[in-house]
Length: 330
Image (cartoon, rainbow, N blue to C red; front, side, top):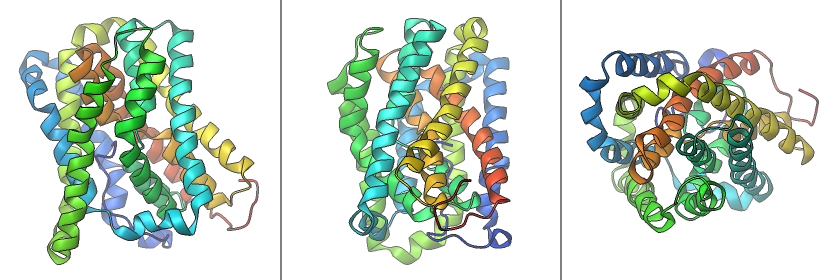
């Protein structure tokens, strides 16, 4: 999921046979549930289209759950290892928006879909990246920190990037979008962090339930967006899906290559690759629906389905290949 289906994962990698069950479920059962939601919305759009009124609240619950999984040491890594954190976040906010713009231009997507694609590229990383990084034997601490930092930067960077790249397709209400991100992302995340500081034992006790709350939230978003854009998906679906797959897969590849250029060790390359390639697509769908149109929310909804599938496959592949800490060709 976007930062939406991620269970809490260990901050350091563990042997593969000790992977938490919740983490394994995140890359197997969760995508199936999201796919099921998308299929249900296509088959019965009139039944689920009224759900669009609650998308903002669903996203706020998801982001609150994200805040409950964060601790202050997640942010302290910026001071201890600033180079990979800063490089990774910079790669994400540079590579993914430009890549989305290029794909939308090459495929000649309709304006609403092009704006939605660019919005997907401009949002912060998704929390399912933390689970995928863990199962892929990557640097989990770096992944968690990158997601946290990119999320906190999103109220500023997401509207600016969307205005710059998508403004030629549709009018972009950057100020209203920034306010929405503050409401949907920053306030719930900070509230979750504060609650964990005040009531740590209670929060730790309920953490096994958080991934299920998250996946229900992102499934809700997919149901609402897909049902509201049934006709557009039917006419432009194949082209849009191809563009989203290319966007996600090239994000993995370019993220890995960019990390390799910094001579980072293989676990760090894997973490940055996954973090760059997996976006908070649930947030993109919510913003697209709120500030553009239901059609502009479609890329985010489809990305939510696809990146969980590709992330699971990538985790399975890398998880079987133990990464040496030294710089090496993977």
